[in-house]
Image 1 (cartoon, helix red, strand yellow):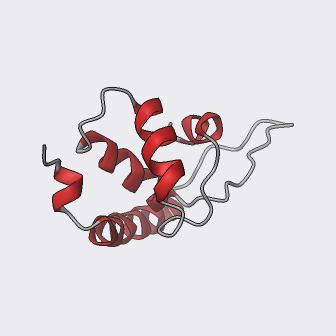
Image 2 (cartoon, helix red, strand yellow; image 1 turned 180 degrees about the horizontal axis):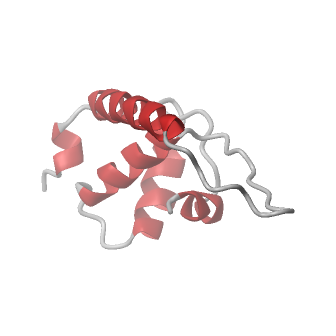
Length: 97
């Protein structure tokens, strides 16, 4: 069975997503934001938005039924070269929203 991901180059997907994210983040910075709440903490992730989006897009074309199965069996096992800063499944799910 051939999946969309196996026919596409993950590097090209990342390249396109990264270009989109850079443009979007530049526009987002120009819009005045609401002030943050006192005591609010937002930790930075080791993974950038483009990497997270690329993995989610790849899941949708992967043929896996669940994201957990895709991430733990495919991404964590064989995508370290493409994404050297991979995080655990639990942390990745926290980054998705």
